[in-house]
Length: 106
Image 1 (cartoon, one colour):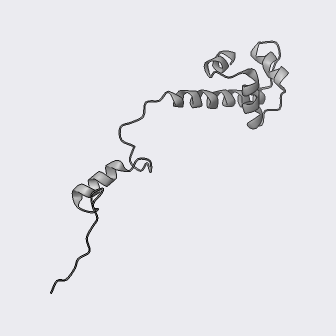
Image 2 (spheres, rainbow, N blue to C red):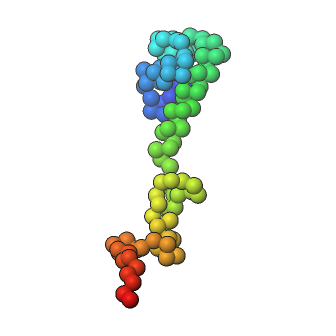
Image 3 (tube, rainbow, N blue to C red):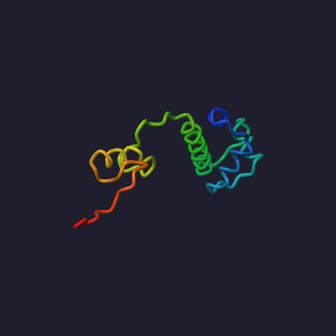
């Protein structure tokens, strides 16, 4: 678990705060001792610590993810592609154009 902590670039105190936030009950000294192999933790506390580490690793890996050029379907993020399609289909005026109202000249 200490190798995972180092990989997630967490200090023992940062990991301890994440551990507490998930319901861990050990103090920072117990956690540090466990990571060094000196103090045992019960199974539930080990699971809470593992969850805290898994979340930290996921957060750090997410920071290195390569963004897609287009968002996945249903993603409310970037709407540029949708606007372009609407403009090509004639459903919206092009950017910068003002749609003129239909005026009856009769």
